Picture (cartoon, one colour):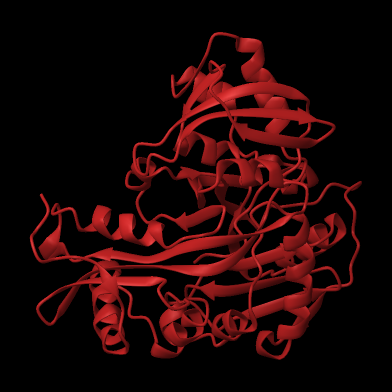
Length: 396
């Protein structure tokens, strides 16, 4: 039910303190004003909206100016939806849909992206989860590397705040080759390494390991036995990945190591007992909506030739339709067409397929992708797969 008089508008400078309060109320975490200032460097004029009820901000949303790596290494401008919040006093009144309608009218990039606090909200707006995150708990006490596992060495203990330039250079190398990688501006590096008390979740200050091709930022938790929580592990080479995990597993007084990674992380295969690595959760991270379907599909590369007509259902903005996608020698050409469709799918499903982390055959089994030719669906799997696993560049 919509409420007369409660309409989205662009933010003013006076709104930001009220937005901080609403965000803290809904997420239980008070954002430091300095952190807000850092993120605001990526929010351009007209890219933030609020709904006000009298003097109170009761809903808000915005988008960041981001740059996303897609399969094949192309980098696209992306609108990173963030700070989406509706007051608990104003739920079920259509405020989110009215904000999103206005906000998406302002987006001119070929892709919009977000990270979701709840998994059941954004599919109806044409967003699909495009990367998968595995949460690991590694029993460090019994984690032994195989005798034939590489031991590259080259890891140093560092003070994180003193190594921002090296971290940034490594991250930039990594994100250029990783689907889902994002350009991280200096303001966000400074915010991450500010290492404020409220960002520690009861853990220690940041510790760091540095390799020429990778780094780890981590905290320790507990008072005995202690455990490690990895904040960020970025490795631009396989050698750096092994070296950094060897350093983490060398923290003798730590009981376990908790870390987030992608499903293809090779650590279990490096150990004498793969059960030492226990997956405690599997969840989504980056969600994508293709705002300009032809432009987005033509920007990435593909691993298999296919010719297909897609019918994309977009219940939110009516920006779907039928598109002929012809893939030859790794490149795609996509144009609008009136031809009969070979495959029918939702806008959210297309977003999930885009980076190669999800399979068309799985969506077909769930009746969310429909085709008369099962071999054609397998061809879509072969085409969209990425040799480099997709990962979220950083949370936003």
